[in-house]
Amino acid sequence: MSGEIGHATMDPASEAVCECGNRGCLEALSSGHAIATAARQALAAGEPSALACPGMAAAEISAERVAQAAAQGDALAQRIFRQAAERIGLAIACMMSVFNPEAVFIGGGVARAGDLLFDPIRRVVEQRAIDRVRHGVAILPASHGSRSAAVGALALILNEILHLNIPACREG
Image (tube, rainbow, N blue to C red):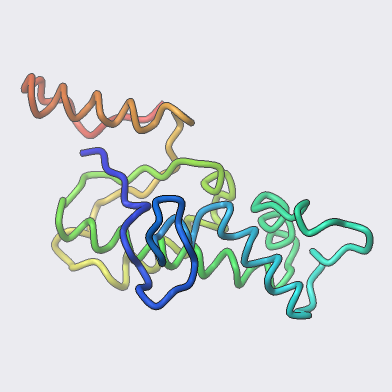
């Protein structure tokens, strides 16, 4: 099954506005844009970080730059990425309880952060998903890039409507 959980409300008290108009959506809290925004806000509040480069405009801070700083040991960048990943893990754990998937594929630019993103996601899923659905579920980066949603939708059609019984949508 392919799904879009980015607009599920993860924090109803959040002031983070999503492009869909809602507040506290997973995307508003954990997307690449949200990660960059969190870093900019922390730097503006005076938190120390290697991201604070003299002469660099705030707009130059991207999720990719935050990921690089986190990989190099920057505590602020690590905290921002961990918080984003933990929210994603919580959303996945909730969806696993509903859909009982064989695998979960995560796409988008943030997925390029690799273990920096996937390790906390897997840890939260292990802690939060119910036993009978979490065992044996692979949580992997989507390898079809911007086409991942279309590939997932096609797999759903082939499996559910045409009854071709294709095993879990194989990436790659």
